[in-house]
Length: 324
Image (cartoon, rainbow, N blue to C red; front, side, top):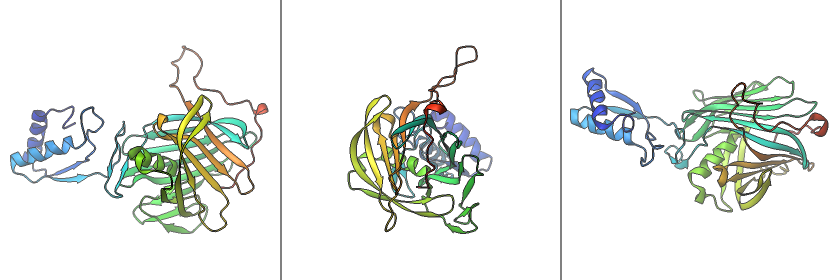
């Protein structure tokens, strides 16, 4: 990579040959190589610029609107004016609780290669089957940009929402209607990681009382979610107490009694340590941090790692909540 694995002399030689062969377009990004100690990002562009000046050629550059490279680094998202730092790849475990009663262990599979992401949330429910929420897409100047979101509840067929960036529409398999696709739009679960990305990029900006609006799509519609910073609190999880910043979703419309609260922990890289949904009837569904999954053990070296789910006979059958 220019400005990192290739030194200046090597970079210039490659770029000279590039121009000598009649090529005049370079596709790059201003985050290269921000993840290297002592670098700030933009080192590749510096080499491109100096080489072009030396050859007196005009090499046009298209700055990709990709967000943080992995490992991610805070950088400005030019399209939105926000600083973003998309969380790095991780396999996350959460205790699931219904009205305070421990159910089975759920997982969040999260991958981020600097240009694309995938998020799969799996919540096992006894006698019903797992609820699986999947979001995948790319990273652009507004942050996380879903391309497809799906919900599969138990044995039912999955409902899918498609974010069509060409037509600027969100289309659904559950309904024939489509809706406009707003810049920065999220789905029900990517919004959690988008919030984490924003807080990671500029944690001091999110003080108590600060409210941010997100356009969020479900499996059949989209709406505005106003999310307010409540403040810093202490959360008790499986491994003890953790300091976390509390965010709450304000009512989306008059009479909205369904609540959503999210706690992001700086000690976890601002990943969610707790997610709590409160239904209008008072029922609470909760995800509570239980740690990261360890890498798999090599064959012959022992049993598979990770905490096993609670046995079905000891786990209460969870009611099926409506969508948040």
